[in-house]
Image (tube, rainbow, N blue to C red):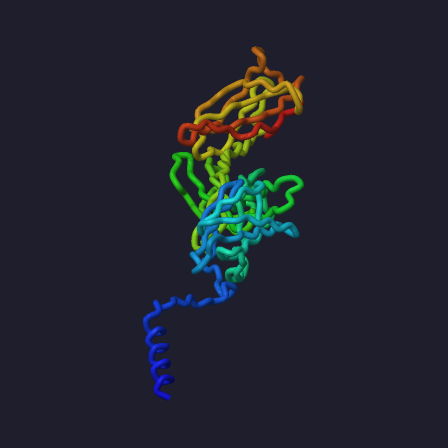
Length: 315
């Protein structure tokens, strides 16, 4: 019994003298998530996203879902910019990857991202029969042909400037049409339309390229039939605010052969037409078709109205 007691004592001492062993606790990696996933930037051909770092993640797997097509990319940081076709939208998910290659859960619900919208096209003033004196503007979103992943912008910023290049009105439209309540139809304007998307959880806007639309109306021409003579056609019109001058074009045919017979100041509202092609006119023998062009200057840019038939005198 005495020997047994001594043996037990020696064994206990040996265990106490052994170095302490560190035991690393294991937490299943699949419990970690990516958080803070959001879009931060875009160009017409790229999209940038970011997210918060995840404990234990050695890298991340970014999943881009284009319609039924999924694309995977491996990323070591917490931000990623990927190339895309123009006018692209897609869904994004990010999965954390541990050092052994194990994939964790994805972040919160997938986010929807977009490239910058394309410049608008075919901007025009709409003439609404029920409200003809109001200024209504329409445009087309320039969608690409055969666009597989296309979308429309979140909205449009519309800013109108007068002929002195001073801002008259600014508004946002969620559709491709709007009413500009501070604009008049007998004045010259520059209207800038910028499509935009919302990023960073709808807190910020990113703008596509601006389209500058110059509204230059033609004068409303009037002719006093009682004042017309064989050798004179008196023309009158209402002044266009912002006009620097008017060009008067005449032809003996409604569709061709127009010649510029005069250029008058923007403050002028009348002109007596007496000569054509170097000769006196003869309203008893020939027809005269009349066009006018409004010329204006906004900033350093000279702009003109379209040229179309405004009136005529026939024998």
